[in-house]
Image (cartoon, rainbow, N blue to C red; front, side, top):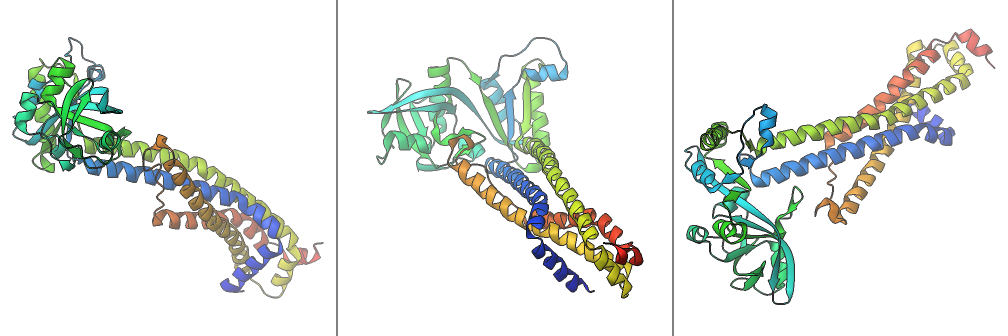
Length: 409
């Protein structure tokens, strides 16, 4: 019996015992479906994170006040209070850096235009902020250097804030109340969406010195961003920033200097770890499915003992019997795997659609991305389950004594 003929015999056996075959395939179906959904969601999450970081630029250096850094280093002594304007000016003088900027977050404030009100995150920034954070101005303009230094009462609105306050009215040149202070709108940013859970379209940006003098009453900065002249200078730029901070703060290591690229690597490692854990859990269902296939193939060997004996009596070789039963078990698992892939794809698309309807997962929801390699891998793996778990029943069938098999009732 050839391979093709053995395949037709396997399919005919499945058709003969439809219910039994379907119940046997259920374990493989659910196992492959779970693997497909897990892989697709993990790969979708990875692709989303990479996309978000690519928007910001992987060579951006982030400087943040982090007193817990001292605890990690096991050092004692006094502590500084925060990043300051002096830190920003010193970092700007580092030759390895092309540009440096800072922000001061002032929290949620009420924005009012005529009868319209909207709560937005008020952030003080300087003229270099759009360059480092990859922001685009859709209408109007961003701040000039002298406007930042003089603390002008002007603002640039996020896309959604502008829509909520002005609707179809042109906001450029209009005056709004920002936490009770009259501010003139000079620009509106292009739609950006959520970045790591923060909706940048709902922000309102004001000149940094205005934020510090009029709202904060101090010179503390929330975070400093810097960009080196080229990617290969990132490491030396980070070292220079760290040495500058240590010189300004008496070697108190209360800061964290990191890059978006290293943060991206850490996040993707965590995502990969979750993928392995979830994939292992989903693989248990495939194990159960494989045991089901082994069980039903042993039953099939018992039912077809006389057939096996007759085939051996007319000259069938052991390897031919072995191949026939292996093909049957592999066919069972492969069909189950294909059904599981189809169901997994459908479930994944349903999850993506459902999460897009909810604001809890952002504008894009949970992305479902199933790469070709994963599809090929799922197909090969499901077939391998059939071969591995069908090996013992096939070996048992191939080694039956033809005389004993012919006498079997």
